[in-house]
Amino acid sequence: MHNLLIVNTKEVRDALVLALENAVIKKEGKSDKVRKFDETIDLIINVRDVDIKNPNNRIDSEILLPHPIPGNLAKKDVCFIVKDQMELDLKENGYKVLNAEDLDELQKKSKKDQKQMAKRFKYFVARADLMRNLARVLARYLGQQGKMPRPQPKGFGVIRPNENLDDYIAKMGRIIKISMKKHLLMQLKIGKKSQSEDDLMENINSVLSFVEGQLPVGFNNVRSIYVKTTMGKPVMVKEAKKGGRR
Image 1 (cartoon, rainbow, N blue to C red):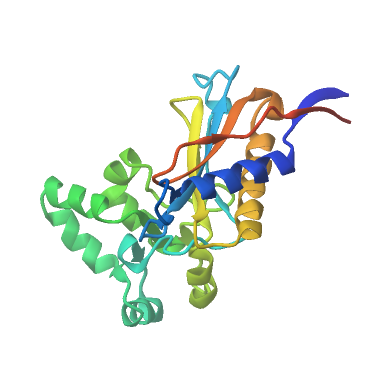
Image 2: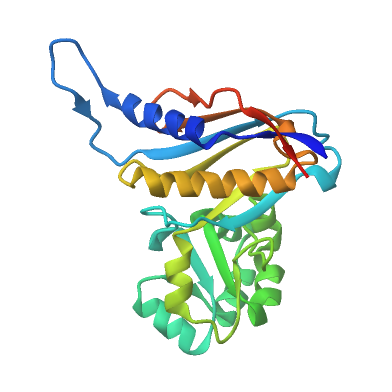
C-alpha cells in the first residue's frame, strides 16, 4: 500500500467558489460590478520531485473534458486538412480547409508563408490519409508550436476518412491540451464563468484524475493546486488529505 495524497473534492469546490466570487469587483458603498466578458476558469497545478529531463516523466497529451467549454476551438481557430465530401461539408460549415492540392501550392511558397499558415490557427485536424501531405509541408512549423495533429490516445487531431463530422465538431469544445515538458507547472483552461459550478467541478476532477495517473507517485508529486479566473487572483486548494490506496 502506498500513501498518496488524495485531493479533497470539497476543498477543490471551495477554491472554485471563492475564485468565482473574486471575479466580482466589490467596492464599499457601491453595487457589485461583474466584468462584461465571460472569464475563463484556469486550473494551475504545481508539481514537485519529477525529473522532466527524462522524457518518460513529461506530460504532453490532449484529453476530452466531460463538458464543453464555450468558445473552445471556435471556427476561426481550426484548420481541417481533408478532401472529397468532407471538404465540401466543412467549407459549407464555415471552417478553413486545405486539401492535397492546397498543400502542394503552399509547398511552392516561401518559408514565411508556410510559417504564417502554421501560426494562423490554434488547432489542425487532418484526415489520416492526408497526414503525409501535411507533414511534408508544415511539420517543421507545426511541430515547433506543438500543433501537429496527433492520433489517439495522445490526441484527437487525426480523423478517419469516414469520421462523423457532426460528432467530431461537437467533441471539439471538450478538447484541451495538458503539457508539462519544460516546467513543473501546468496551467489549463477548464471552463468559463458562465458554466454551472457542477460542470466546472466535473471538468476539474477529470483533469486531476488524468494528471494523477501520469505522475510517478500520483498526488504526492503535487506541490499545490490553484483555481483562478482570467482577471481574478489565484485561490489555493487547501492542503490535501492523507489517505491510503491499495
